[in-house]
Image (cartoon, rainbow, N blue to C red; front, side, top):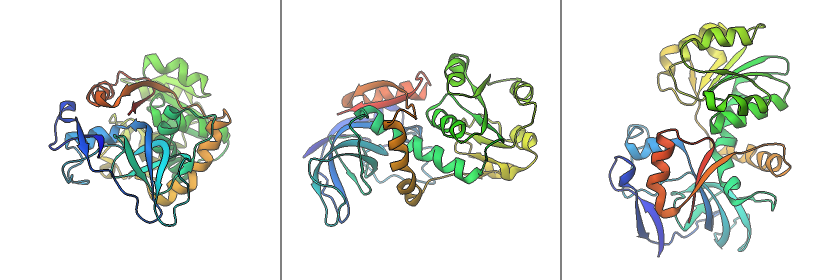
Length: 301
C-alpha cells in the first residue's frame, strides 16, 4: 500500500483527502517512482472542481496531478530507466502521492532541485508547444497574456531567447519580474489594449493567451487575424475563431529533455513559490485557486 491524495466527489479543496491506495505497478515502458516532488497545476483545480467534467470525466476515486520528479523504484518491461535513477516527467494515474507511474521518464540533472524538476514538466512543454504552433520568428512581436504566471514566465524566456520581441500583461506585483525576464511588461485589466499599443509601436504579430481573462476579441483585433492568436485558458476560443491548444505525448517527448537542459544550465528560470507537505494539498489548491502564488506550487510527499 501507499499514501496518496484522492477525491471521490467534485467540490472545493476540502474534498482532497490523504488516503491509503494500492501501490501502482509499472506496465510495459513505464517506471514507478518514489515521488520527491509533485507539481500543482491549474488544470488539477479545474478537474477537482468539476469544471472539466464534460471533457475529462472522473472515475472516482481520483488521484490528482499531472507531473512529478522522484527516484525509480520499479521498472516495467522495456522501460528506459533503471532502479535508483532520478527522473521527472508526466505521470499516469496521478502524482499527488508517495508513488507515481511515468511512461516517458527524463533524467533529472543534479543541478535541478526536486521542486524545480517537478514544476518544469507541464508548464515547460505547454509554453514550448504553443510557441511552436504560433510560429513567431525573430524580429516579430508576441503579446503574452498572463506573462507573470507559470506558463507565461517560461514562454517569455523561450521567446526572448529566440529573438522575438515580447510584450507581457501581468499583475502589478509581477511587472518587475516580467521585465527582468526581457519582456516589456504592462499592467493587465481595464485599458490594457491602449497600454499594449503604446508599448508595441511596431504592432503585435501574435498573441499567446495564458490568462483566460476574456481578452480574445481584442487580441484578434490587435493582430488582425484570429489564426495568430492561441489560448490555453479561455474556453470561449471557438467563438472568436481562436485555437485552443491542448498537449500531446509526442510534443512532450520532443520538448522536455531540451527544457531540462536549459533549466539545468541556468538558461531557464522556473520560479517555485511554495512547497507544501502532501497532507496540505487542500491548502495548496486553495492558495493557487485564490492566485496568491507568484510561481509554482509543489507538494512534497
